[in-house]
Image (cartoon, rainbow, N blue to C red; front, side):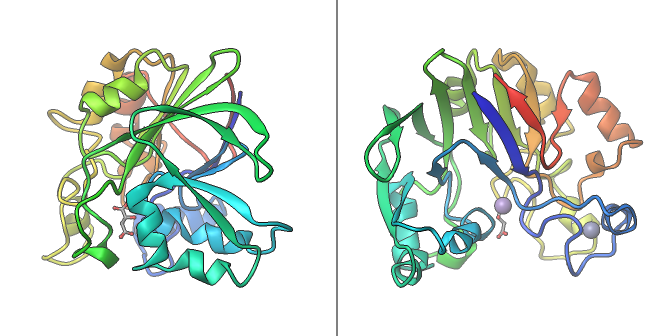
Amino acid sequence: MRVIVLGSAAGGGLPQWNCGCGNCQDARLSGTGRTQSSVAISAVVCTDGEIDHTLGLLLLREAATRFPLYAPAGVVALLDREWPVLRVLSAYAGVEPRVLPEGSRVALADGAGRELGVTCTAVPVARRPPRYARQATAGTYDVALRLSDQKGATLAYVPTAGAVDDAVRSVARGADLLLFDGTFWSDGELRAAGAGADAPTAREMGHLPVGGPGGSIELLPRLGARRTVLVHINNTNPILSRSSSERAQVEGAGIEVAEDGMEVEL
Ligand code: MLT
Ligand code: MN
Ligand code: ZN
């Protein structure tokens, strides 16, 4: 299986258009930006309905035929109602929503039903509905994915997770590659970066901080994945700076920081 990290940043990308922090200034000066998190696996599978993880669907409108979109039931409902991407796209190529069952393996197939040689198991992770749908009824709004090819090579893709819980453990166990939520280094990062006194904490947003007690660099090495790489990294996160002590702590734990365009052959 060939995995390509198309984007390694959180919502807003790097640099974020309205941000002048050190990370954003460095990215502007060096021309090494990052786009919003996504991975290429030869089928479109949505882990959640957040704007940063679904906006790209609109860019697929020039497809020659209706394209299949795998997503959890809660996300298909969001894309039909609160954030009606499916309806908008129906005027273009159109989308065929395929609901991902929770916890059971499906063989991904193309628009004509031909199997792609990749199976996918979606496991719900504990997170709130997106900001644009705060009142949405209870449902699964975020999943962790376990993707395997015919040779058994396995990718665990978990770009948003509020905890390392049983769901994450089941997806990551024995994976060749774990791509995990690296949004924030610390819980109060947005506030400290000047995003306002009412800015939510990392945990309130459903992102497990990377650093500190109980942070992901403490927990991820215990999951048994062969290689662990952080994705969905916010522009405020100090690990983006290669010379930071936080980056050294990540690397010291045997964990990598994804780059846009990174390719991994499993
Ligand atoms: C998230 O990852 O928590 C969301 O994408 C944040 C947002 O942009 O609202
Ligand atoms: Mn996001
Ligand atoms: Zn910034």
